[in-house]
Length: 355
Image 1 (cartoon, rainbow, N blue to C red):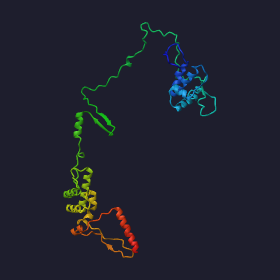
Image 2: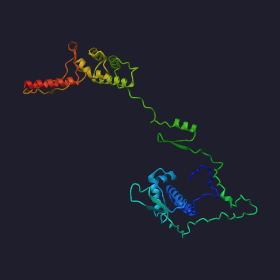
Image 3: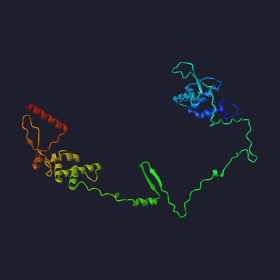
Image 4: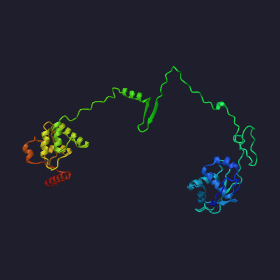
């Protein structure tokens, strides 16, 4: 249909497609929106063009209804071809080819001429009266104008219920307002800003009082100073993570029985040019000093593996006392895991060769 020229859609004369009023009053409320759109397209292409059948493809239905989904059109056609809810189908389908992929293009649809609406005997719903366009409108009273419609208005319909007022001697209390904060899942009730401030200031109990912070686990400040000097870190400017590492290193050294002078002596024997980290100092201070601190307990004597054929003897694993000559005569040897593994293999091969 060409709409190049303007057309009066609701004019009294023109080209129209006849549709029964029952379609709008009874059928339309009981159909889905997509089924009603497809039914209007089929009525337009059959009754509007004076045809009994018309071959309508899915693409033509999409262009006419604006429905983009093929599944929605198929569901709407299935609804129109079924007997529910009217007892008879609204459409009839006629195929002119075998079932194939192109069978949709050759399917012809027609309106069901045997479709009839049965009157409801219960009287629950009645068909609205059909008025003739040429009949005159009902005359009104002589005193009313042509645009006035007589209405029966009762004063009770517009009367609002009287509010219940409190007694004059009774104090009116402000109703608390409750609101919820979804982010924190909490509920707060307040009456006014002054009352809320008073409640918040007086609701502190003995359990809510701030508890004093626990004392520091480090009871030897000179040891912490020596650790900072050994690692060349300033406790006032380092990051929080490094500060916790320094405190932990000093705490462990203090629990192990090391003193500040021993830390300074271990740093003097550090073989690398860069200063040790707190972790390196904590792991290698025993090897640097060559002995465990005097306050720590010595390891018990435990039997160790002896060469093949030799008797097992108890070997003491206690470290010898630290002396200045032993600390300066031979520097400690630092070996990585690969060196230790190589040394173990060499010892094992030496034992095999001797056996």
